[in-house]
Image (cartoon, rainbow, N blue to C red; front, side, top):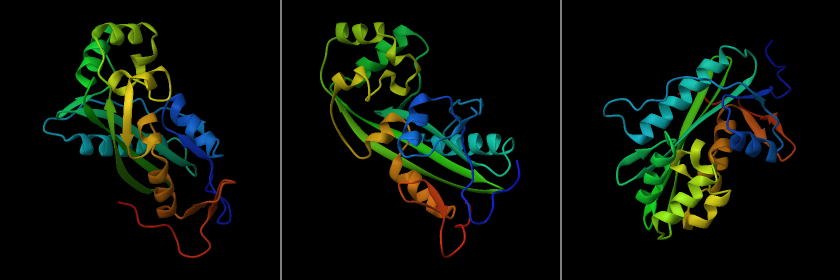
Length: 213
């Protein structure tokens, strides 16, 4: 693909198979192509959750950008952190139940890394939202796991789905908990030199893209 014209916005590629991230972009009027990065997501030794999601978002963006020259690649990674423990996607049903019981009646943080890449430039950032679960018995966790909804979700729940019944409250960006922090996305787009005006993206009238990190 060739580089976009200076007066137009580039095509957008989402480096994720997450339907939730795609839905958020479409909700904003940004219709992405889908090309998952498929890179290892293991936590490195002594890596903090914040550093973990930041690194993975950048690695995903870079991997997919190499396949889509001239497109703006959006990549993200999200984890749930409770008591210093990082919860990714459950391995199986029992792992999902264990995660939910670790979260019940407690506060936890949903931390996302988000990265954009385009023609050798990249920007990235992090966002965190505090979520509190209500108290519930193990039977409730098992009933929720039996619906199948938790199995591909960090922390084994979906706040935008049936998992809303487990949530007592939250502080911060709701869409970050879903999987793609909207305020951070808009900030990163501005840093890349594009303005969002509810109709889509357009290059900023003045000034060039902010330097990558």
